[in-house]
Length: 248
Image 1 (cartoon, one colour):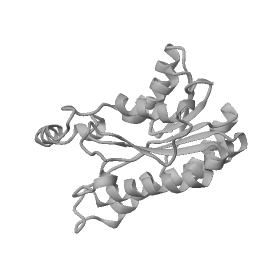
Image 2: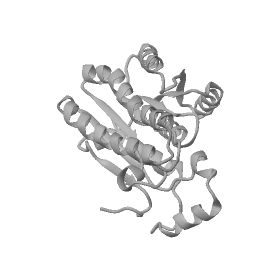
Image 3: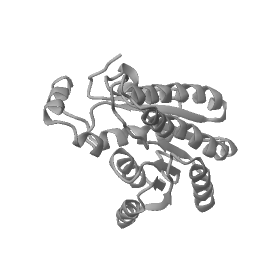
């Protein structure tokens, strides 16, 4: 089976941005996609768009901050499709503030959403992958989990932790033909970055060797590769998608 054709992919945070792009790209490549988020209206629109091009998508409401919804959602996906081959842990939030002023609630919310949820989702789907002795887990981390960022102690910590989780689980399940990798986007044009000041955006682009911000599709195509049969000898890797701003 080449690529991802016929595989079942569960994608969190699929209602917009990178998650939405991942769903479109994986579905176009022949995967059946279980699209998950809190906003069902946006998910329904995405499912209809995928169906209009001959793809297959099902909507599942999952708030990744809720452990019971994660467990129930994963069970529902397996009930619908019979298995989960690919997990894309994409859902994430930011609550930026200087560390001296950061509230504990903002720390907890970001760590719970960006790190604890991927851990719980991995637990929820790993049984299906172990049973069939095939699986792909792809965690969307960030360049700021590699270099840090002022005002984002919570976000950078959660994304750095996600890299550690990626490598630890990769070692645990490699013998069962399950790979676990991370994709680390750099400056990507999304709804999350659209609200930032124009001067900040311009200064960021000036530091990117390729001379432009990335797009959600740039990230989605990297995810598709790591989810594919062809990437079967890659595990525990952090694939940088950052236009060259961080190398090595």
